[in-house]
Length: 370
Image 1 (cartoon, rainbow, N blue to C red):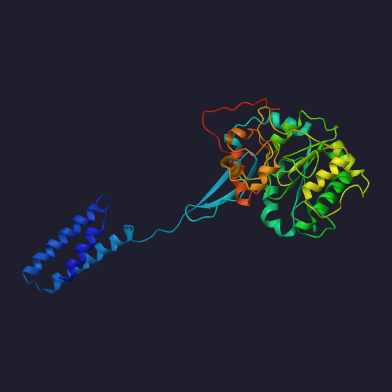
Image 2: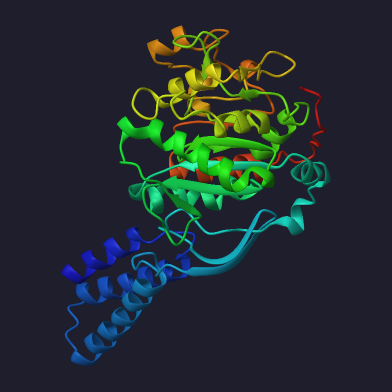
């Protein structure tokens, strides 16, 4: 009787569509056992045959059904993207997000001729403020994503890292010494890279920059004029200053005046880094310029795309940003340049959204937004 109960459970456990044949076989055996039991058959030979048959059927069910979890497959794939390249093994299930470089230029068919031409005509040096604790987390991702689109990429810290193009400054790490880091960094750039670029951008290691859009914005500006550009804040400095997190960019003339200044003209350390740079620029006759696009939409951003699209600005922001705090897609330029507070994982996501995600059947054309 116990054997009959076990068979009944197995029959109802099996999925009827996938195991129909085995279910029919089991039902047949149940009938035979029922008849045998009713007839009080006690022949050992018959019991042996029935037991052997049941054992075989149960083993088949056990290994062919989903009772046993099948092992994960590792699928070797070579991934391609026109901007990075490499090979990776991606697990079918349970694998962390792929962090390797991919190259899908063979299917993108992107026409980069305009961007390539601008890269030669508008040479941009990008320098990134970082620290030793962020080398392997943030700085590495900057280098692997947007940083490689700059004509020159430099990282400024207090120590040198062999895996990054770092410059070690004689500064103490920490927020209280960001002003000293920026002052020394721009001086170093002036002394060593003045002739190798036309524009000189400073940003943080959690800033994401669409360099092609930066070049387009700068393409109508004269680098011989004493200007700098970024996300315009109103207070503290008479002409205003630019958010350090959103990044700001100096013309060659602005860098020249900064590099040749009297060391006592500007504060060497302390205070708020971006405000102190703004004060210094104003003293040197370097002017702020408008960075919104032709439709009045913002290009430099000191928060993440999610915040600028959906809102949630901190209270101080409403009193700081020139032109008012505006949220929503309609207030962000299609040729946005920068976003801030971007985690390493979000930076990789932005890299995908900007350079890989495409709606099929929609061909975009360049817009005149300067």
